[in-house]
Image 1 (tube, rainbow, N blue to C red):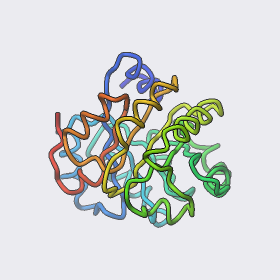
Image 2: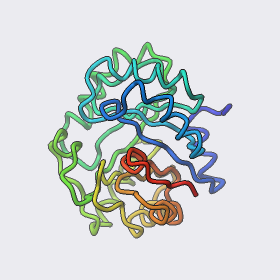
Image 3: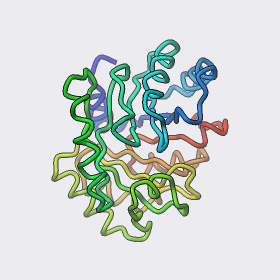
Image 4: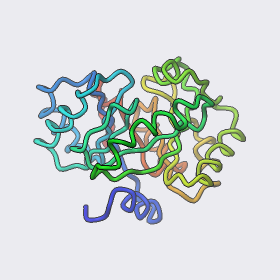
Length: 238
């Protein structure tokens, strides 16, 4: 991939080419399993590997990404639960702002704490508006961030939040139902958000079947993120 990560996503979005990201949590994937896991990801023809989790200890991400790099050339993008989950060994970083919440710690404080590392980093930093959608569980992100997810039925608030994120200069919008969600972000929500923004849309959480994956793409997701289904060895190749 000769383009930078964001440029690749933007160009793919304009062409209608759908992208797949596999989310790996260093807390759930053992280092000795990475060679096998990498082969499975290659077989799925995934475009990106996202690395991150809610409770990853400091330093673990660095070791984990270094090991991944031994077995795959797929771009690795950090999806950090907090500022300590950063490493220069990855290719890029989703610089997340939790715009669906009102806790300043995840709107700006964590981002400021990451700056001393990031300003001397070679990572491609991608400003991303992160919107938590109710997936039927009290996810780890909700517990840690002490915020409330937006109801699946509150399309107006979700759309306005996404637009606000775009106006604030975010380059991506990420609709997240949460790791292990009982149900994914619904079709209407994806459709309406996509219709009202002119930046790429990422959708993740609760996608466990090929039909749900196709549905997310069909309704406007430019990138779909699969985590729990991959961990559970569910075949989502399409």
